[in-house]
Image 1: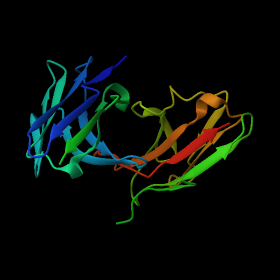
Image 2: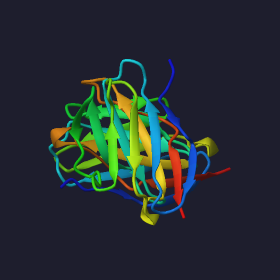
Image 3: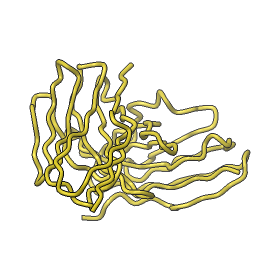
Length: 111
Length: 113
């Protein structure tokens, strides 16, 4: 059974700081990994999707990396802004296309 | 392009009552997902459809939950009878077949009293 862990559960940083969010998974036989942000009371917004054959994806100030062999992905946010405050979730698609989410990292960027 | 639509946005019911949620995916998206998200947790997949066929419903409590996608487009998730522990946000998502990049609706917040 796939287990997905996100550490830390919560993170508070000053505006302008670069930061890294972590996602670990137990079964390395995955098809892809997707990063989302979730604002309070709202649905999930897709940030980046990394296919199993890829090592990283970039979108603006965001960079996501994937190391299948070690069961890890990181989301790097450059020059953080207060608008980046949200909960960040990773989701792994594994065998039989089954999707498993992590519990998320709640990020607060302090002005 | 219109996003994933869900209704209602909020629902309050008493335990043992029944409730239904509706989802309309992005046009052309063959894959549709229902998730349950309990406060403070990540979403848990309840059921995944490919067109109108079920791909995975291993975590759907089938004694009380049911879902259908009759024409391969919109979908309904039903709970009957509801329990207190069903209080959660129910999220619907869709993706193109083969791409698997999921797009989520705003969710339905269910409170069972």
